[in-house]
Amino acid sequence: MIRFSVLDLAPVCEGSDVAQSFRNTLDLARQAERLGYRRYWLAEHHNMPGIASAATAVLIGHVAGGTSTIRVGAGGVMLPNHAPLQVAEQFGTLAALYPGRIDLGLGRAPGTDQATARALRRYFDSAEAFPNDVVELLHYFEPAEPGQPVRAVPGAGMAVPVWLLGSSLFSARLAAALGLPFAFASHFAPDAMETALDLYRREFRASQRLAQPYAMLALNVVAADTNAEARRLFTTLQQSFVNLRRGKLGLVPPPIDDIEAYWTPQEKAGVQNALACSVVGDADTVRDGIAAFIARHRPDELLLTANIFDHAARVRSFAIAAAVRDALAADHGAASA
View 1 (tube, helix red, strand yellow):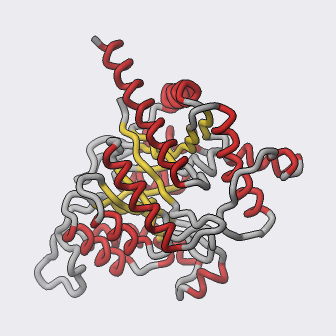
View 2 (spheres, helix red, strand yellow):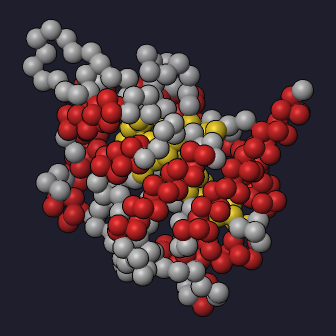
């Protein structure tokens, strides 16, 4: 059975603050470790009041330092915002502090608007240099050569797993060409998922880092004790997507009883398309939905995310998903016996 992992955006909810968000992130990471999730990833966003993971490497260190065995990493670092050498040094430092537990996922988008990208002293045009930046970054993780003028200290010679992330064919093709694992952002941009997966698997070239293609798909999973409660919890994410389309950036909103009164028909269609890769319901519904998603797309790993307003309900959702994972694994073992 495939592994399950966690994607956390470090949400800042209405009525709360960033400090509480970080406490919740560490608590969820510890719960995920106890529940047997493979990895815990945090994503770089900027100028978004409801997401507190802008300083991604710093927050990864906080989570890794508060856990023991779960892999912790970036899903991802938006490379156009950074010099490759600095990323190599940051993640080389993390790998030295927490050996064998750090992942580095790289994205090509800026993770923000163009004005904020300029404020970061990097420019969105640098996304065009993404392939060269990835190759440069990979080189910094190789053992330093005699006379090498620039090296990552720490970083050189450290086997930090590097992933490419994407929501289009570009990163799928690059990951295949470089022989890297690939994670697709199907939790918010599912349109090209099947085509990207097929391209990645078909064009993959083995490398020293990876012998065969390895694809992870992101999936929104909101689980609760009843279908009605799960659907209500899911309205938090639905509202957030509507607000984003309205240009209304704010804190994560609480769930509401009537989402139909909140959005227009056009907004509803757009949000439903963006969130098509979502499984929402009680344990039985989530089990059926995840099983169907796996059977259709055959990912090597699932990256679950749940933007739920109440922290206890969020932890409960991941606990239900872990129980579903174990049940599916038991079914798979029985079928293979």
